[in-house]
Length: 257
Image 1 (cartoon, helix red, strand yellow):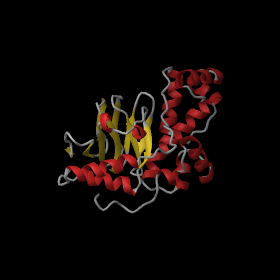
Image 2 (cartoon, helix red, strand yellow; image 1 turned 60 degrees about the horizontal axis):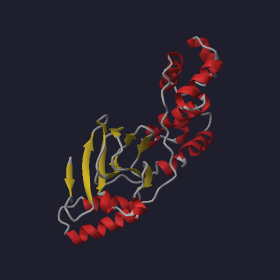
Image 3 (cartoon, helix red, strand yellow; image 1 turned 90 degrees about the vertical axis):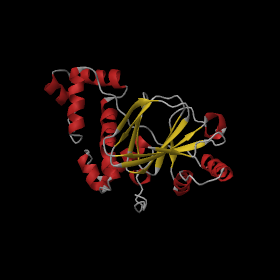
Image 4 (spheres, rainbow, N blue to C red; image 1 turned 135 degrees about the vertical axis):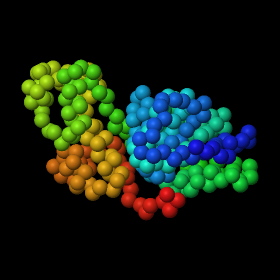
């Protein structure tokens, strides 16, 4: 890890982290705001209220003091601006985790602020622009809670291993020793979601790493249990808030790696 540009007169410093697949930072918090962004690969950010999988096209604003954990879902380079709350404009002071668009200008500004040869005036100008171009996008966390009851938990584990399994709860009940009605109550009570909603969110979670790897949408749809690409895209948009190609836009590789 390297941190650059941190000084008494600056509002932002940028952390540069190379994170091979599977590297995790256990739950922690910062006294400053964090903008979690991956220049390469996929980041997963978990909080007590949600989980976000972030490709290079998206970043997550993490308010100061919020406990969170970070994990590399692939070979990842995380470049995170950390923002002094005392110098952060009200327009960029979100109090909850907020997904932001990471367009070409924001990505260039983050890389620019990694430089160690900027004078204070140049840094200050770049920081103001960075904070001015932060724009939320309507993305919903697709985290799913795991049921604690062993019968519902057995169903959840089986579906995590094979999201294409489309059996109704009555059929699952014959496998785990509970009625379909009992399982339905357990999913609502322990996950906050009806079983069908829970399974759809689980399928979206399973789909995201495949989409990020560039797998065709038709193939991803089949691997997570949808009969057609169109039905998968409609479900993804309904649950996540963007289409798969909006979430994972196809763009040329970053020459910086």
